[in-house]
Image 1 (cartoon, helix red, strand yellow):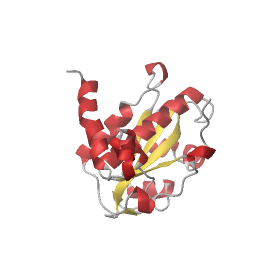
Image 2 (cartoon, rainbow, N blue to C red):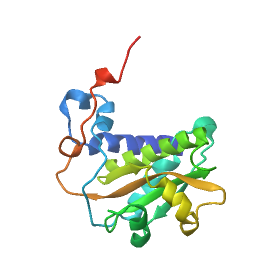
Image 3 (tube, one colour):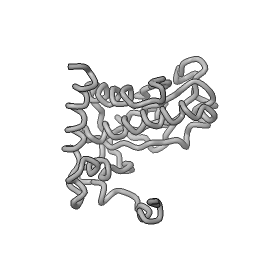
Image 4 (cartoon, helix red, strand yellow):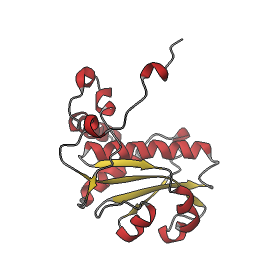
Length: 190
């Protein structure tokens, strides 16, 4: 059995089981994704290496146009450096900076591919019981001031980062998620 099938057999059921029920939408596989939310209530606590390895594998296995896999992952565990990137970072949180060649703004295909990797990381972290949040705001400052300190590969710029950490027990997508626009204002069928 190849590695992709093993990953699908392991990660997808975990994604489905890791999220509490949310109405009747959980009858379909999409229900597990609908219940995710961008955590804001991180608490201190480290993440075991085995869990980080699984989370990173999800990013590595993300789809990419033409299977280019243009990304590079920089795992920021140094708390002083992490707090320079995300001011409210909590001890034990990890920042995963996803970079690609170019300036991080004009290489549209690589940017989209990195976004897909970020989403895979975001979902895998939540499937393992952690909070996760995707950031693009710090990219300009990070690329201007911290590329060398982060040891990004030559010619790479940060595109997006994902924060992964522990969250307060009992918080879920219903109690912690920000409101969403109504589907009928965002979707049109023709």
